[in-house]
Amino acid sequence: MTVLLSVPRGLSAIARLLRGDRPAGTLFAYHRDVVIILWVAVAMTALEGAVVDVILRVVLGPSPWVWIALGLHVYAVVMIVAVYAGMVTRPHSLDSGMLRLRTGLGAEVAVPVVAIDAAQAGRYPSFDRSGWKVDGDGDATLATREANLRLSLAPDTTVRINGRVRPAPRSIHLTVDEPRRLAAAIAEARGGAPSGIPDDAVRPAPAPS
Image (cartoon, rainbow, N blue to C red):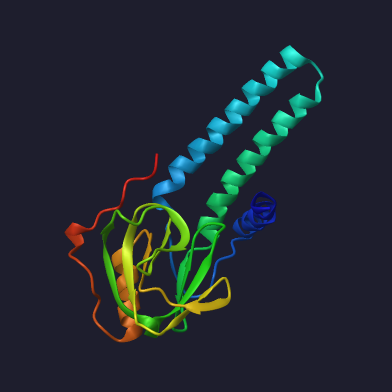
């Protein structure tokens, strides 16, 4: 079922990319460190598909398996492009007192700025690449690689996850290309000073292999 749902989401993301659609508000990208990996994956998958197609045609002749293999490789290429399109067209955004966190074709988490006690840029290796999840301690992760920004949330507040109201976790760990810029924007929206660690202590996490 998840695979079936990912197809229309992926095609929709590609359509948004071609139209140049972006969310409203101040945008914060999170795809910088994975762009090269995604396009290498596209090239390798396309090359593999071409080689497999030739081999199957030689071995099997005009067999349905040739078309099945070709279809699977085309699907793989389209979905890799769709993941890239989702990241580009669904960045994090800050607008009208609401911080909206997103990840590719996955979840959207809306956090009221007034619910954020602190935003700290840094390295959080315990919170690596993951869709939306909350651990037993109440710490949430929404990251495309090692998290580099921690949002500490006030108790007894709520967030919206894909439009549904849920109790806010204790904290949210996320990935963003410019963590200190987002931390400063949150602080400005809250009317306070940015929190975090010095610039020289922040560096992008390595891209996943």
